Image (cartoon, rainbow, N blue to C red):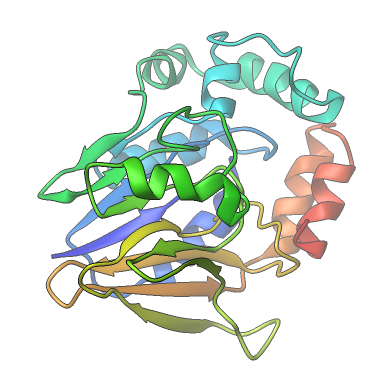
Length: 251
């Protein structure tokens, strides 16, 4: 089975469509949350995401857009985006976002893996360093967990001898590229497919991953997309201009 892993689309329709156009063949799609927030196409992205399947966990921006959390912990730019998104969502999409399940959840068809937005212990906590990852790696009942939230493609591993983090090392900054990771027996993994709609690793290209359950390989992908169109939508919506400019920097 080949599972397309999408996370942190953040209402960036242009990035999502580019990922789907470039993705190799897949059997199902797993979405790790933050379908909305920051970007200017929340309804279109929800509709497109729902058309791909029903495997979702909720993200913090999904909760913010439906009033499940207050905005005190959001920075002013994120809070402004959440409020704008609330006002744009159709009633149907509001209801759908509100009902998204909390992770971690088992990956449908492959119970050896879990799906979560942030940390398995707290969906809103960021896993950025090996210090953040070590307890979940050792405590989780499954050897493989896919997570998002940080917008950083890569992840962490632990075996009997060591524990560390890893990031795909790409050769270009503007072309489509893919790097594969062979999973090893006896090793536990936390893997982030990266952010479709707002990468924060200094690479502006949209990120996603494909997991081949039989070969036990995760294929990381970076895909260029129509950046200007996504930026123009944000500016036309009178969202904070920084939400547009940061897309080009991958920050």
